[in-house]
Every structure is written in structure tokens, then in C-alpha cells.
Length: 275
Image (cartoon, rainbow, N blue to C red; front, side):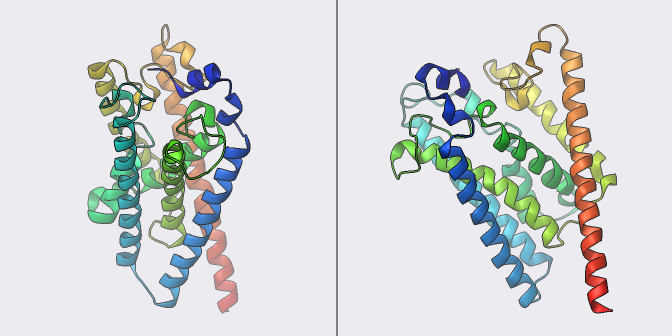
């Protein structure tokens, strides 16, 4: 299957894979929506003294939201010739990429509270936030715009995938932010190992699926599409894996450490106000 970058290069609209007008305006409406929704939900939680049950309902709602968009994407691809013949669904589009893990992690957090949910909180916060922000910053590697043939956000069929992609990835940013701001999860840098163990489990599943389906690149473990270190895969696959592991380990520890520091700073400020 062609990558989005290849298709963009062939059609001569490569600017849309970078920070063109469409991507920037997409980020504007996505992050504006996140800010408004966060403000409203956190205000409701504080005003009406809502507890963890309310937090789980919010995350459950987010999980249903992205699953609905996943269904919309599937229907579109089945009925479009953009990714093959009508009625064809390429294996590459199956929901087993790293961003797809939000479908499962948020569902567990929202609908299945317990030990497993508690264990994957660091993953749902740190890895989801880290990876999604990288994808938003480097859209060329992810095909985040969906269909690249429409240069604006007009309401038309060709813009279904761009709306799906931005709404979906925006939710992957919203949930981690809500988890911390609501107090549902209190980040600790010591939790980084939990995020890495969870990531290792899903990476093993992705690796097996890549080998079974042959034409997939789930979690960039087969071909490394969009990864600057992909040239290592053919001759130095072990080094490639070590680089990915190192980046995610350091990245998740950094995200958790910053969040822990900001949380502690906020707590001290609140204590000063009450004394």
C-alpha cells in the first residue's frame, strides 16, 4: 500500500502533509474544542463535587466517540476507491497502530475499572499524549489529514477522513489532559515502567500481526514508514528496536516527570491560597 506521503508527492500537494493552512486551521479548531470541553467538564466536576465515577463516564464517552469515528472511517474506506476497489479494506488500515491503542485503553479505563485499568493509566496518559503530539507535529509521516485532495475544511464527502483524523487524534490529547487535570490519574515519573510494559505487550501483538498480514506496518515495526530510523530495519533491526524503546522510555518518563512537577506546583499554590 502507498503511504500518504507517497500519494501526496504524486499529486503535487505536499504542502498539505506539512504545516499548510489546512493543518494549522485543523489544529486551531481541535485545540480550541479541547480547551472548551475541558473547561466545561472540569467546572461541572468542581461545582457539583463529582468523583471518580464522573471521570470514568467522561473517558467512556471519549472511547465511544473515537469508536464511532473508527466505524465512520471503515464505512468510508469500504465505499471509496481512494484505498482500493469498492468493498475492499486494506489490512494497513486496521486499528492496530499505536494511535489505535486509545480505542482499547480508553474503553478499559471508562468501562472496566480495576487493576488492569489502574496499571495502564500511565500508558494511556504518557504514551498516548507523547505519540499523538509527535504525529500532530509531523503530519507527513502519519497521513493525519486523511484524504489529501481537499485543501480546506468544507463540508463534503472527501473531507470525512480529515475530520475523522483530527477529531480522533484530538481525543487522544483530550483524555490524557482530562485524566491529570481532573485528578483521575496523578502522574509519577516512577510509573514509566508501567507505560513501557503496556507498550511492550501491544508491540508484541503488532509484531505478530505484521508477520501474519505481511502488508502492514503496525507500530512502525515492519517497514518503519515515516520513521527517520527506518533505514536500520533491513540490516540492524535490533538497533532499530532499541532506538524505539529508548525514545519511548525517555519520552514517557519526561512526560510523566513534567506532569508530576506541574501537579506538585499546582498543589503548593492551592495550599498557599488556603493558608
